[in-house]
Length: 163
Image 1 (cartoon, rainbow, N blue to C red):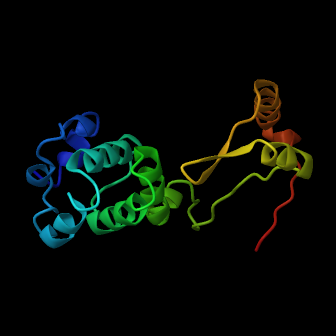
Image 2 (cartoon, rainbow, N blue to C red):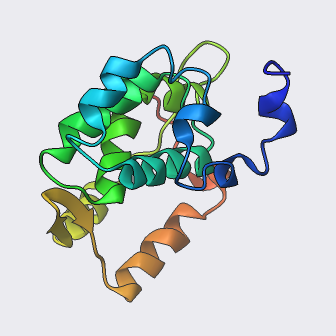
């Protein structure tokens, strides 16, 4: 049953945690009672943790590595209890899982870079939200950037830079 649950419940897994019983829903929680007790309710509430877990699942990120998730939440919660901030901190810790989705068969992640004027224009729109940098370009700037990124790939220069 547990081996088939990810494929059977993919569409409804974010609704399985109603906010009341995540300990009994997840098979990995009983193996980490001390870690859970250290974080909930000392650092964040159970409801806040459930919101973080739901958001990670909405993004199709696995929460099986509960130790990493809880450590990320605990570290970030000292600075802010905002769910998006907590999720971003956990996402950073799960970087291997995130990048494995976009890496090719050789493990290389291909990326686009912006030219200097576009980068400078976006840099001028940087703001702060909960201590994190956020982009807030005006509508015209955002449209120009999106239009240029939507250009057919054959029009892009064929330069590959290797670190």
